[in-house]
Image (tube, protein in one colour):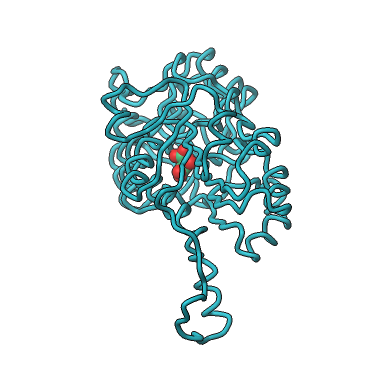
Length: 337
Ligand code: 8YV
């Protein structure tokens, strides 16, 4: 038997990453690329050292309790780890790592793309041409949208991604407001021209666009509750490239239907029973822009995420502290969904 670390990879990864993993580790990849059941994960992990997981793997307390003793590391291919019951993992003596930083800029780009898509009617403009198979030609009053410059953007969660969004938003002439666990140091805040709010409700009633950049934890679940959505300005919008559970989705849909909110641009939405038909109807009406969890979906980010997973595994298996270990005091673990 080889002394190489034995790893189970639950989803297909870019070819070059799988190839590198295959040379470095005894690698078992879920070729089917469909989400594995808990039973399949357990079967696949027999005799393994490492589980390479993604957001689609639900690693709850029950699964953690049943993991083979040989498994000591959960190396998440991804930044958010809300699919993992961190408390259970830590209590079981497991190390958990993630792949932050490498997807920050791409995710922030997508937030800007969504932020622009709504007021500049990007999807509607394309659909119109496709439906008519023709263009009616320019007119002074056709397809008027709204200017982004000068609007107030409220960022919820000013970590790496929130800060990258703020940098971009500043270049677009937005006035930046943010709510975060802590105020950014002035050295960061000043160049961003950002206003810190310690009261989320107050910020929500002052901004035109709300963009979510907080991880999903026990504390942040439903952070945009029905009550909070009702505090938002009439005609304002929501952008979400984080997690669906941060928003009371039925309340968001209702707020757009009644016209209280002008719309939403969502890269993440509740898909447990498929896309809510009312959300689809709003998308058809171009008041909602929908994409399917694409914010970090660039080849470049995926390759760097893969490399980061490899570094985490190698350092851990060499007996060192992996660079992207998630420490128990870092987050309030929410536990697996
Ligand atoms: C990843 C994400 O693709 O990194 C995250 O938190 O949401 C996604 O962009 C996914 O998590 C992969 O596990």
